[in-house]
Image (tube, rainbow, N blue to C red; front, side):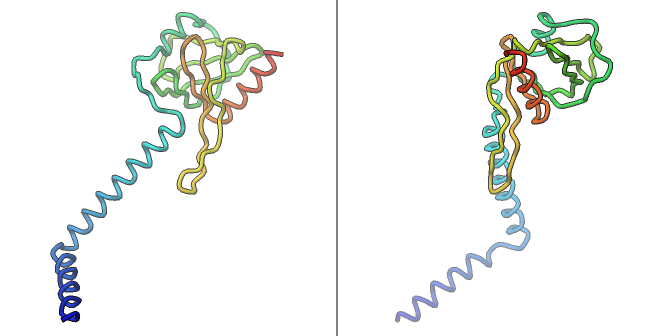
Length: 166
């Protein structure tokens, strides 16, 4: 009697696994993989401090009204910058007393942001997620606008802020 129950259980399991075709198993696997990647990306986005709750934050226009200047340096580096709630490709140049920013697609002018007006919100750091090290960006605040720089520019800005505040 016990053997018949075991045989019946194995038949039930075999029947359950055989009722789906290979295509259905692949589709289910892809859906699970997609869900896993979605939650991984969401966790990474939140862990790296890039969660933007308010898409109407102050940004380029607010800073341009306050720090806009028509002229700036000729040699600048193209980097990715998160300004307010938007990500931009911008030209950046570090000067003696401040940093110059210029949008790569806009001809509005330059921003000249003095080092002494910056506040460090979060220094860049390394976060390990699923055994993969990820570099977080440096997060700064100036005139109620949050600016996020990649690791090299964030470290340069932190060093220049320290020198300016001495």
